[in-house]
Image 1 (cartoon, rainbow, N blue to C red):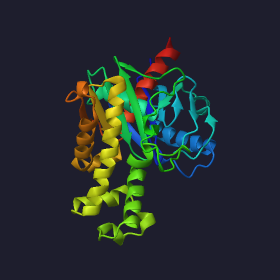
Image 2: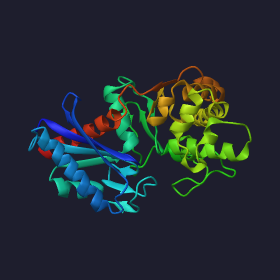
Image 3: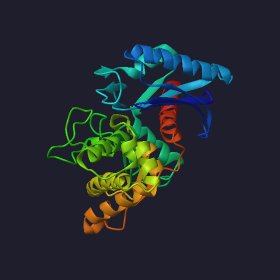
Image 4: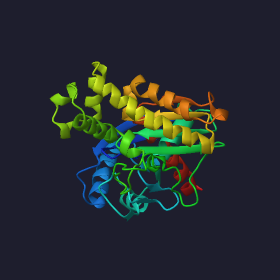
Length: 323
């Protein structure tokens, strides 16, 4: 069997590429922008070019056994990306087959949060943990559910869309999926920025955030302001964490995880997000679950969890095609 595989993490903003050995070491990296490719064929052309460049620069031509991909709304069983709210391409895209034809290497694909869960279970905070939920807090909110040591795919490959549970049924925000009131619309990085805009429009108190044009505010601006002691920014994190914690209490009720692992850009806020999440979860848990569920940050580097998880798929498809 060939000594290396490729792990690819397709995010709403950037796509990360890693070449991985059998011990889980990421030996080489590259990245391209996900946006700016209105046609998926253009994206695959650029992805292929970046991948081939990385392989050749590192002397690994002919040494790649498989490619694993993590992407929003990716279906492991079908090899497709389906109706992804945070990607430029709509409809059902036979992504694995398209990339396989372009690269001439076996390809497998799964939901990006599922890939992150596999990475965390293999190399990170969830090593040895048979029951946990991975929550990715980035452009959107993704999740991967592991129960009894198995990643839950469901009957059709689409299980674990916890970012699209309804958390505000009355007058909920419109989500990118087309529904209203989804968790993602409140607790993703874009959701935090939306909360900031709402707070600024509805309230009158002074804030560092008022120095920024309201439509330009990002979650990083909210974080920077909160770290500077800005009262409104601190309230935004409390509001976000409370919604997230309430949702976690519901998630615990259906799979009784030992651990919830948080991954993604929003985790950089540290205790600003962790404290209200823990408080709200514990306050809303059924008594039988109280004090039993740890909430932890991922132990893997930001790009590594999804890339390593995707690479595990790469090994799987390489083995299948080697048999």
